[in-house]
Image 1 (tube, helix red, strand yellow):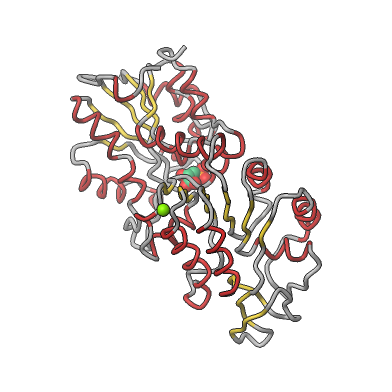
Image 2: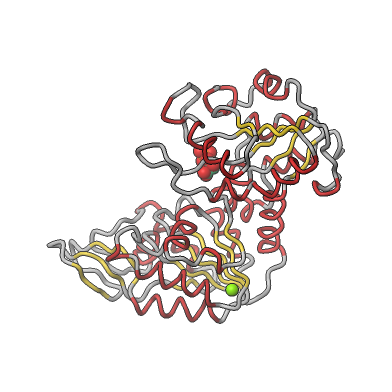
Length: 364
Ligand code: 3PG
Ligand code: MG
C-alpha cells in the first residue's frame, strides 16, 4: 500500500474513521480533547492536499439507537475550533449496523466517497462497519496517528531495548490476562500495582483485608508468579482501616482494612526499576488517584516515567489521564490514544482494523 504521505488526495472525497470517543462533563462539554488533537496531522494533510474531508466516529455506547446524550454536537464544536470546515458525521453507533458490521450500513457510509483513511487507533480492535467495511471496496490508507501507534507498539512487542519493564495497574487482572501473558514473553520484569496487586498478594498467601480482588483469578496469579520472570509487587499499602481511618500497612492488611494505593516504599522501589530500564510500558494507575489521599503511588510512577532516560510508552485512558493530571504528559515518548487497542496489539500483534487495510484494493 502506498503510504499516506505519498498519496495525493487532491479533489477526492475522503472518508476518515477517527476515534473521537472523548470524555464529556455533565453539561456535555468535552473535558479532554487529546483524541481530537491526535487526528490533526492526518486532517491537515488531507485539507492541505485539497480533499473534501468527512470524519466519522463513535461516542460512548448508545447501543444502536439515537440518543441526545451521545450526540456528536459537542465534539463537532470542539473540532470546529481546531480544524474549521471539516465535516463530522453523527455518532456511528446510533445505527445498529455499525457494531454488527452490516454491509448495508457500510454502503450507506461510502456512498459518494472516493477514498477511505483509517486513523482510529483507539477503536481498531473493534470489527465494526466503519473500521473493517470501507476498505473492502475503496482505495484506503492508514492515517498518521494509526501509523505512529502501530510503529511504537509493534517495536515494544517485537524489538524492545532491554531491560524492558511493564508497569501494570488498574483493578482487574482478568481484563489484562492475555496481555500479561504476552508481555511475560518479552519483558525482563513486570511491576504490578493498582487493585490487581491484591489478587497477586492473595496468591502469595498474604492477608488483604477487605481490599478489592478477584477470587477466581488467584490460581491464575499463582501460575504467572511461578513462570520465572520477576514480578514486583508492592511491599507497602496505603488505605483505610476497618473504622475508615487513613492507614499505612506492609504487605499484610488487617481484617476490615481496604487498600487504595501503593505505599511510599513501593513507589520508590518501582521508581528504581523504571530508572534502570531502557524501555518502559505503563498501563493502569497504581491506586485510586482521583482521591488525593491515594494519588501518591500513581504520581510517583508518573514522575519516574518523566524522569527516566528509557523509551517510555503509556497506554490506556486512566494512566494517560493520570499523566495529564500530574502534568507529565509531554515528558513521555508516546502516550497511546488507545486503551483496549494498545493492549490487544501488544497481545496479538494485529488488530481487525489493520487486517482490513491489508485487504484494500490498492494493497492487494
Ligand atoms: C475506547 O475509548 O476505548 C474506544 O473508543 C473504543 O470504545 P469501546 O470500548 O466502546 O468500543
Ligand atoms: Mg524519557
